[in-house]
Length: 262
Image (cartoon, rainbow, N blue to C red; front, side, top):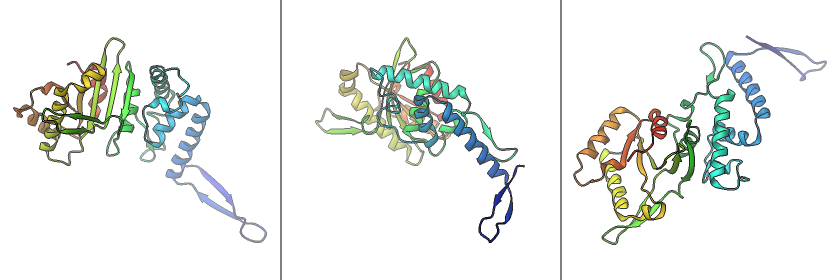
């Protein structure tokens, strides 16, 4: 346990006050020193990505806006962001523990980006940090929203949490991501899937991008996953069930690396 002393300047002639540092204070001080040194050593672009991780801040159109504006194209910005993220993963802060036995905290990959605070920003960071995968396009709300007119001339709006195009170097995969907290009835999610199928049948997305994204529902637990899978399979009016995938947060990286496959 570290001890440190603070001068007491409040009284005549000075004084002396002894403070015993607690384990929690030691952990916080060590973490602050480590992150400070890390920030000094990281290049400017890596600092931008690290700030996104450290503050869990919201992203605009893509990670390219976090210090990659000088790249000649969005594709180049995506490659640069991927490189910076991989450097961060290997440089130490992700997976390092601060403090002693029973005290302190750690930042793990990808556990640092999961849990109740899961957001589109967290998912964006996960996508850019997936080994062997390049993010070619990424749109957050409201840029990822889609409007279309159905066969009855009724205008609808889809509001996915995130749209992305990824590549493993051989194939491109298109994705719509929806985060389901498990608080709504499963029937509401199935209803939303019907709306996605109506959008698929309109052909609007295919005319614009040449492909229709797989709709990935990120669910909180196995029970919710089974409930939604059962609901989709039992919905006779949903013809293109292959458009929908239901995954746990821990299954995302494997899915992105494998690809949509439809």
